[in-house]
Length: 279
Picture 1 (cartoon, rainbow, N blue to C red):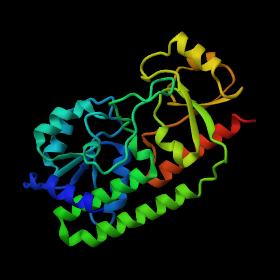
Picture 2 (cartoon, rainbow, N blue to C red):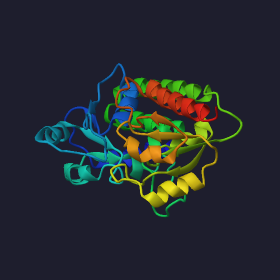
Picture 3 (cartoon, rainbow, N blue to C red):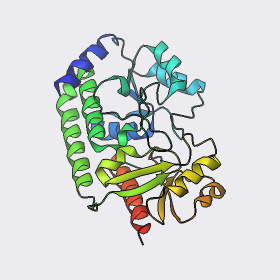
């Protein structure tokens, strides 16, 4: 925890001209911030109805950043279109650059780790979400010391509720294999005891190749496989795999009212898919 406080002090030292409000780039981090700031202030979501990968900036976005006293974002690896605007603002902090989370490398479509990369879906690992919560509490306590006790109490409550919720997940003793349309769920694997068996494509906007479809079919761990995918995945492409249980999931938690229920919904959907694939 001392590492969080030290980083916050250094990060905020150069951001001395406060306006008003915390702006958070994407939905999952915004949901965490809502819990941590509850009863004190309301954060603002910058990219409403947009993911970090597909960003269309408007004058309203620029005005929101201009009026903020702090912008918390994941970082260039996840939200590259924001980099120039936030760098110029001089009041942004990137979670992926903070050193507070435990990151994993990207994997290719056959499950091999890619050196020098980072999988940016870090919020799906409960321990990372807890660290982000305490990070937000530390940042805002630096700015508003009078609210320190409330921020930290909220962060502790969030941590306890999330970790208890994760521990209550009824996992099997044997790791459950799954496929994904693209690899976005590895931070769930520890909590749910999952085993990644490959992805159709490394980019959800690029169609899978015939070679990759053949590879998955030839190396399937069981006759019926769970396939996790965004709801807009092309049915004609994944049906070529045969013998699948298709489960639409949303790792961005776009419809969730709070982080813990959003994470639990995603966990429940994933477990249902893997268990149904065993039948």
